[in-house]
Image (cartoon, rainbow, N blue to C red; front, top):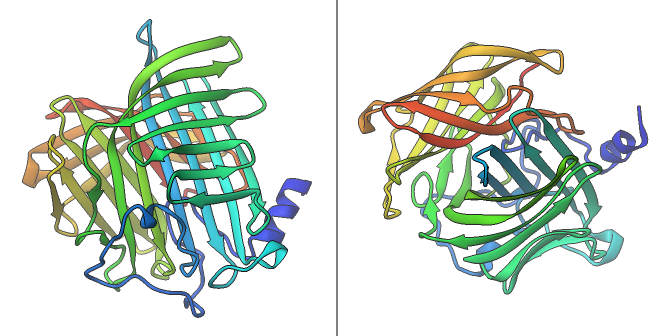
Length: 346
């Protein structure tokens, strides 16, 4: 076991899956829990919520170089709490970690950072907005115009973001149910970012432009005991409409799915549980496990019947918390691009 993993296990006494709540235990141990009919306050809610157990600022982007080559980018800052609330210095119960990645058609680069709260190494400020860990940062005068930077041993990026539409709230006005038992999170997104900047790759710098999607989510609740993993899709279609859909797999072969249809003007329609259907159609062996890399995705209420395919089948996040995440193409009733994240594949 290397030093990185030892430090990780000391900081995180439970297993955490990115973009999910599995492994968080059977109760919330004094943490606040999401309630229906939330009232969001901005810019304050762009900041941290230390009374909740887990939270993230999660950016993905579909990019294109001047020669038409497609790329993907990820930047994520996670906050997880050992106990509710905040304290000064090393007494802070807040722990931070971050992931950054670039995906090309032929390569996937990923790295991570860890920090303890209370000492200034990582954190989030609501206004002016700044989310940081070490020298990585997502920041701007407000949430509509920001820059994002990250670097790893063999890649880096420096990008500018500009929102072209409104925030989007998932579930019932931002109250997003995750299981038939009623576990839930607060969940909103900014899916309308234009993005441009420079990717630094081993073969040189690449100027890129594209679109980006930023997810904000926090909760304290675990998933159901039978839920084993998560498949999350953010799809952007050529006509300007967008679709967020996720499904939580269960050990008995059943599952729970939820989705949000987003019109080009930002008008949202929260779809009924189970309306979003994603079925794997091709798998690929990566990191010693079979992972779906092509899916048949449908949302009949909106006429969606598409094939979602990985740009790079080997987009495995080989980090302390391993999972698959990368850009995808969309073909069928709707054409476009998007991002796919999959956890819990052993």
